[in-house]
Image (cartoon, rainbow, N blue to C red; front, side, top):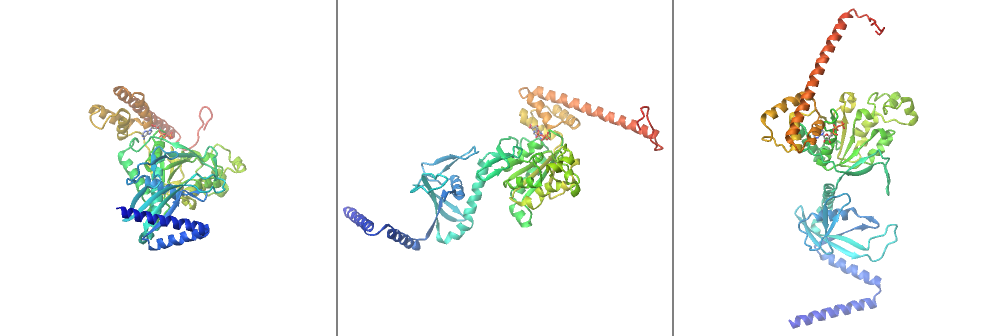
Length: 490
Ligand SMILES: Nc1ncnc2c1ncn2[C@@H]1O[C@H](COP(=O)(O)OP(=O)(O)OP(=O)(O)O)[C@@H](O)[C@H]1O
C-alpha cells in the first residue's frame, strides 16, 4: 500500500514539474497548439464523439439549449440531488433542470446517449448591446462515433419537437386579437395583442348530442395527428369548421373546447378592424402554427356577395358604411381576399391551422365559402336537445344519468324540451340560479319549457291564420289585377 502511494506521489510530482516546465518555457500559443494536438490524438482513438450546446450562441439565445433542457427535465433518470426549478413565462407548470456536472442517460432508437451539464464562470465579457449572463452554461452530448449519423439526422429534431409539445402543454393558451392595433416588439410591429386564455369549456362540459361530439373529436384528432396524411396527399395542413346556429347554442364554447383539447392558441380576427386585403394577409403572416383562427359572425363582418365582380369590389365591404365612401377610405376586404386568406397560397405559410367561421345565419353565407375544402365540416349548434340537457343537468346539479331524477320527471323533460326551442345558454341560466336547490331548479326549468312550448304552439296557430287570410286575399284578387285598399295602397 505504501508503495502505491509513493508511486502515485512521484507520478504527480513529475506531472507538476512537467506542467510548470511547459508554462515557463513555452509561450501560451504553443501550449494551446500542444493541448489541441493532444486532444485530437485522444479523440482519434476514442470511440465517442462529443457535441456542445451552449446556452448563448454568440449573443443570441440558443433555442436548442432550451429545448434540451426542457426535454431532459421530463427524464426520470436524472441522477442529481440538487435540481433547479423553473417556471416558464405564461406557464402554470414547474420544470426542473440539471445542475453543474449532472448527467442523464437517454436512449433513442436503441442508441444510448449521455448528456452532461456544465456551468462555468464566463471568462471575458464580449462587448455587445446585450449583457451576457455571468455563467456560461453548456450541455455536452456524448455519442458513440458509429451512432453519430442517427443522432445528427433525427435525435435533435426529435428533441425540438418534444420540447415544443411540452411547452405547449405546460403553457397557458393565449388568445390574440387584432382590434387593439398591435404591439411593439424587438422584432418590429406585431399586429396582434395577446392575453392568457383561461376559458374552462371542454368537450366534457359542452352540451350537445354525444354522437355529434364524438364525430367532431374524431375529426380534430385525425387532423392533429395527420401530418403524414397531409404530406402524402399534397394538401395544406389546415382544416375549416363552420359553426352555425342561434345565439347561445355554444359556438364560442365549442371554439374554446377545441383550443383546450388541442392545446392551440386562438387568433380572434376582427374583420371590421382590417382595412384591406393586404392588411389581412399581413395579419395572417403573423399567426403561428398550431392555432385556431376565428372569424365570429362572418355574415355581419363582411358582405358576402358579388365576389367576382371587380367593379363591385367596394361593395364587398363592411356593412353600415356607404359604398361610395369605402373606395376613398381604401376600406376593401373582399370575399376573394378572405378566400385567399383561408384557402389560397397564403393559407400555407405555417401549418397545422384551423379556421373557424361562426354565423347565426347560415343562409346568408356565400356558397363559395361553404364548398368543401374550405369549410371541411359544417357543425350545426342546435337548440338544447334531451341528450344535451342531461349533460347540463350533470354539470350544474351533479345529476348522473340514472337515479338522480324520477323517471316521470325525466320523461316530462324529454317531451317538453323537444317542443320548447330553448338554447343551452338559457337552460344554463335557469340552472345556475338554483344550484343550491335541485328541486327548485328542475321545477323552474319545467315551467319555462312549458311557457316556451305554449308560445311556439300559439305562434304556429297565428301563422296558420295568417296563411288563411293571405289565401283569402289571393282568392279575392285571383284575376291578378292590383286593387287599391281604402287607404289607396296597392
Ligand atoms: N352547448 C353548450 N354547452 C354548454 N354550455 C353552453 C352551451 N351553449 C351555451 N352555453 C352556455 O351559454 C353561454 C353562452 O354561450 P356561447 O357564447 O358559447 O354561445 P354562442 O352560440 O357563441 O352565442 P353567440 O352567437 O351569441 O356568440 C356559455 O358561456 C355557456 O355557459
